Image 1: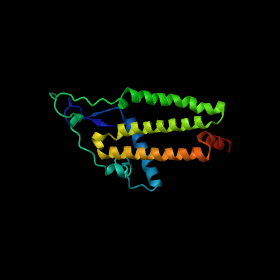
Image 2: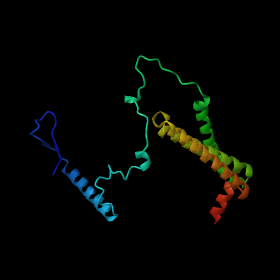
Image 3: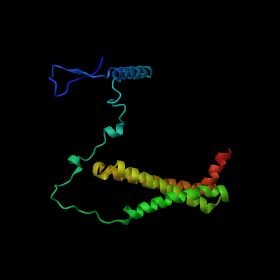
Image 4: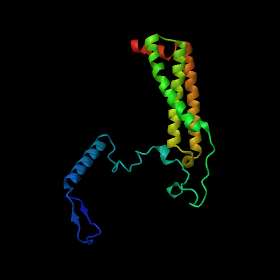
Length: 192
């Protein structure tokens, strides 16, 4: 049993049978397998897993977004482009700093293997790693929770990231004071 198609060049009462009977059989077997697995785990009432509300998280369903214009175009073609204010931390300096920190992590991670545990190297490694994680999550927030779509949720995510980075920084400080640092902790775990 194949898929029936009716192209515009053929009259509506003359459908053409395509050669996809093998594919439709495979799809049907896949659907039977999925429905059997859903029955076994107790989700037999779920008929279409793609459109199910179980797949969408509750936060996304209730999240209000700012309506966007068609094609995300604001204004008309005849309006002049307004340049954003220059900011060095959001340009090439920011990008260069990110790459410098990422490259600096390589020798800092390898240094304790050759020189032993040092408080200065360990503190620098911890600070670079924390900054690297902060910048990475900041980029994710900027890309996937843009302020033009999510409004204040973008700001909340940035505040939460800053707060979490501060808590992590305090945790790293405590780790440096009480345990001897990250490299000492990794060494203890490695030899345990």
